[in-house]
Length: 355
Image (cartoon, rainbow, N blue to C red; front, side, top):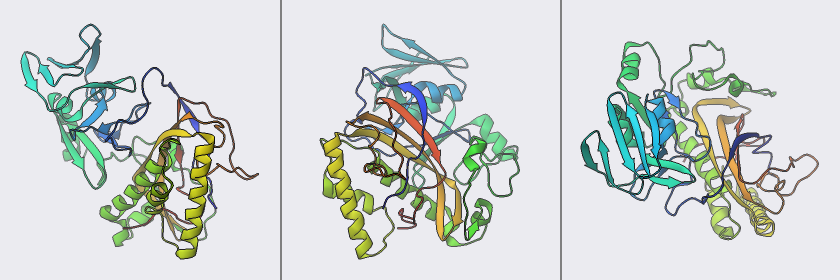
């Protein structure tokens, strides 16, 4: 029933060890994209999250360096220091008291160590580095922009789309290419009975190409895979898991829905038997959608880790009961894997197209 979802993967050469890799209580399991000066930041391991104080926390080095800062770690005082132009920004881990040069500032959240990374409040660090921060609630993403880049956008030197992503200067007949997305991301090799390219679909003027609808599709994808890729055999609840997946699937009638529900319940039984624990994210590229065979297809980036499993070749719902046509391959535990998937599903659309 379920076709390949994960497919062949490319290992990211980062191994997590020594610290807990389970999401802290109250932390959202969806990937929260951070876009700095039109470029989406790809984190090699630990992803940003919203803490219990409602603050977006990010690995300090990757965002700070993209804004032109240099990051140092003072081990004796457990303090992360960002040098930016003539400023020295200091954030002691575990303390809400921070400083910019000689000025002391009190925050409502503290820097912390999570999954081996020093996490800092994004808004404070970005604004201290003279950048603006905007949260796009509908797209569930954060845009960080410095003055120099904002001036380039205003002058037309660079162009950005509705999601704040910088458009590529490379000409393409089919795609509205993004400057930070590699060429292989656009390669779609399949036979379609009917199709519209990304450019054709986004310019056809229908209401379904409006940002509000595309953001809804993206959110269903994030929620679906937040459930599917974050599995723990000790805590998984069959009815809750079925509900979390099916609430983000396309409604195809009572019979099909019942069959799908039973298949998901079978998978839950397999998770418990195989002692599966995984963690992962899906990051849909909202602007890279196309229409094909009566389906809307959105390019999506996957990232996941198998924390433990009796058989790591039979872990996710697409291959828990391998057949001759399914993917079945051993993966390492404690390693982040990631790939760009050209299709959400190989079969009929299971992700809802609208709410």
